[in-house]
Image 1: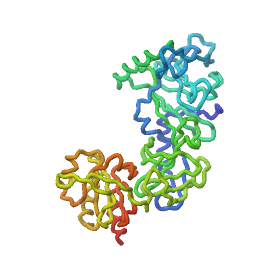
Image 2: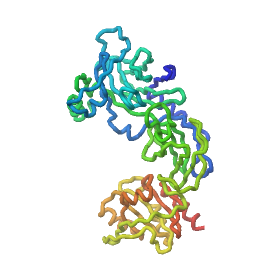
Image 3: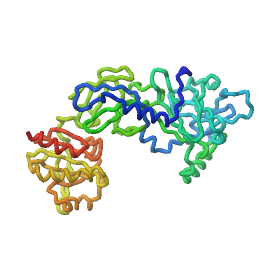
Image 4: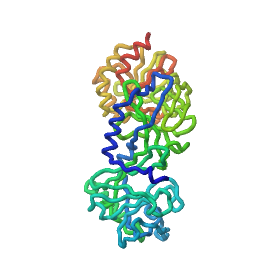
Length: 438
């Protein structure tokens, strides 16, 4: 990797750039009313699940010797950790203090799937306004031929893995908030000290918290919502198009972070799908991609419009009594399944509209299935709102069969049990049902 491509950027600067670029997007790709979806993956985001985690990076002191990563995660006490001599930057300085750790990344010989990370000033780095940071990007354990990035005190920083053929993924680094997590800090210190072997652990409060920024994306318009559609650099090697490793991500738009629950492996014939619609990859030249509308029912992420309703039995509650009912028995009527959660604010806001529709359209079998609510709450729902609908429960098995992507989510099936439409905006039903009836 060429050192000239290594970038350093403050996270605050990155966010302002991202926000500015998003406001300039024109035109926005439309996902549900066009036969072609064109993407230009020009924005960078983090993984929401990773952002919410501790993301702890333990640092150890080195004077030119590093120990294998496995000793930290539970190697047998009788095993001797493998060591390796490294060439430190400023190797002419005696007693200069560095902290190191092996960071998850592409393969190297000494530590498979890990990259050596070095921080200047060791446990005292926080006393300086700035400290240099190195990644051993060429895996030769010589830091004199690596150009350092700079870590600034009191600010979040992104260090990039940039190969030159993409804008690269990276890590946002900041001091670990030990004051906020007293119990974790104490337990973590004890745990690592029991496993550190001959190394000197710098300590949790002097170590780092990481947040991964490894998703490049474009903004897509889907009905009244904005989605993030992009690629996740799963193996953190700065390349987003490793087949079978990297993944397509589809997520409701959220500044800076993507929800990675909906992922599809990157392949030459990748399919993107969201709430009843599916597109197949036709052209690929990173960072630009072109998808074409596909009616194939091969999606593992969503039910495609026209698909027959999955067969399952659900528990319905009627006047305090429960019984089982089949998803495909609707008395010859069209069906609307609404999967909702008792504590979901969106459903509370939209429910009045759905209640009105269920009273007007008696020719439709309305089924409300609650995901995660108590029996008492669900049982009393109809009585409180004076509804003539089937009320019941959505189990994990039912959620899997319906391929739920969001909550609340509705499914409109015709009299032949074929999916007409699905979505998360329940107010859409007010416009959809009259059109379907015509």
